[in-house]
Image (cartoon, rainbow, N blue to C red; front, side, top):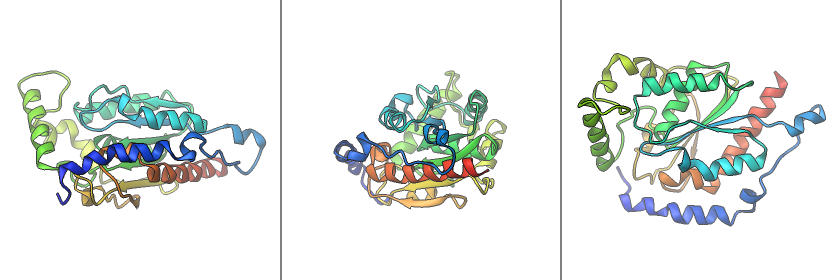
Length: 248
């Protein structure tokens, strides 16, 4: 990893800048071409948190999306340390509760789940954005985070319920999940992979999903969900997805 762990303290600077951005408090709601009722509709959004994080970690992002007019649903994850195969099945069931295609946004490990969902359910995912997500190599993380991953896996190995295990890395339980991380995505479903070269948690090169548009930001790994540049790129993604939806 090229960035020292102390770089993650930039989270607070990023958060402060977001709070001073007028677009955060008054997000644009551009008119969509076509019948007037379209202007009042926004695609629903599903948010998936990162490793060792829960839905509460994406509260700021969820609040902004609701101000923009989106129905937001959280993943139901309290601590993202479960078997990816089981989580993928559960999240797939959650997708079925939506009446129309969903925009899925995932941070870090949550982004790998979001990417797999998009490949597994192409008709139910309208767009996907990953935030610092190591889709090319899930273990391309800093040494301290890798030690934590191994500790969680060890606890899972000895029988603590709800945790991934060592077997998840190569085992049958996550085989489809691993395949989906390399599977093609639907051509007309926009995909964006956000990364930072100064990410102190994940190796930025592992975030460069060949099926997605790459967006580089200057910021921390933990701060991607409160980075003003990310919000501008997300706004662009949402607008593209909505236009595609109405032109189908």
